[in-house]
Length: 280
Ligand code: PXL
Image (cartoon, rainbow, N blue to C red):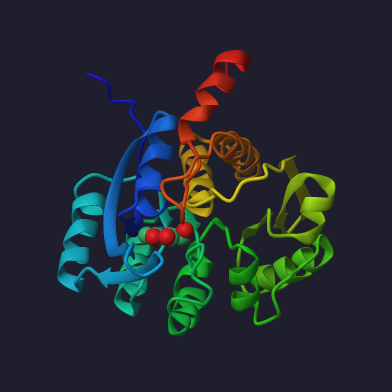
């Protein structure tokens, strides 16, 4: 009997296309050798008859609560990630369970947009996320748009602006911030590097990996936050978990592929080759 299996959970949306959301989280947890559990907050679907436009169907409060009881009371994860929450009751319930069960390794991915969807999905939820979830998190992992929304600033466009916005998020009570510039920063394409910024109360560090010229990056944000959650569950420091997650997502994007003309995910299994070479 293996009693050493590390158990982790994601409170997130299901992405019917399989590349983002809890599907990305579970694949990532498995690559790290962990056991993943899920509380589904919403089901996201994409319409092939209407240019892959997104629809979001919330899971009702009772069903969400029952899933959280299963996971937290019934089993007990050592690390938890939240992704797309979709409703105010999901934000409140997530906060309730993370506090009640003293989850220290909590990663807040403040999902506000899906790739391809130009506008925030639920702007009214941002205040609840900031008030209830941000103070509980060991790390928050916004993209540039989400960082600007949470900080109440314009969207950062340079590394310097990313650091400034991260400082505001630290002042708002975040313990650490991993802001993903990735392929969105204009200086990324010039330098051929996907650049992110990690900040905590000791300062900021820029993380870089090669920039892959691909549109198929669906689920990259979810995968990154899930990889950080997995690293924390394995006992890594927040910074070490971030460094390993950056390597993991870079490997995943190096193997990305299209699902159809609209969307394509990374391939989280790609890093097995890397592990085989470096014996990590
Ligand atoms: O990538 C953001 C995201 C998160 N969660 C779910 C999604 C998406 C984007 O499609 O569907 C469930």
